[in-house]
Image (cartoon, rainbow, N blue to C red; front, top):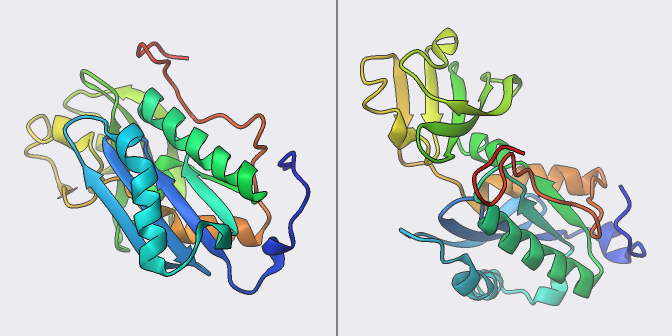
Length: 232
């Protein structure tokens, strides 16, 4: 896809440094990778959204820990949703600003794809799930090979939701809504795994190698709902 910028020789370098930004949930997370390998990350999970205050500092800390300057970056990847309307806008505007300034490409990574990539391989189906207010979640179902077997959607949970995919592993901040509701079902609860820029590393590097970049002028996140929680 066109980026609306001239191509840069940086894209052809042997060493490919990518900055990864995750702001889709209350987690504020930044990572830096080299050729698909994690170099450093900085993240926190707060009760409220602190992205506007913390994100720039986290980026600088991650760059410092990696021993590089911002000018060394070859691309920026961004967790593209679904998730918090405000959080996604903050993350994307920061990512676009860096890409415009450095004339480097923007890479989008779907938030649930990045969450899935954090789960160790198993023979179970995997359901990354994000809180979408009340008893609703954003979720998709992946098989053990990473294939999507139920597409992303906003889903109102009940006692039998996703029963046809059992047994499965569940993770993400939507998990808390299910623990009591599904207490006696054959589910593996991964409360230790949450949205993180680390989950973008391998996906973003593959897209970088394949030149799968977004248009800086026109790209928008996957919102599913607007700022008032109304389905788009």
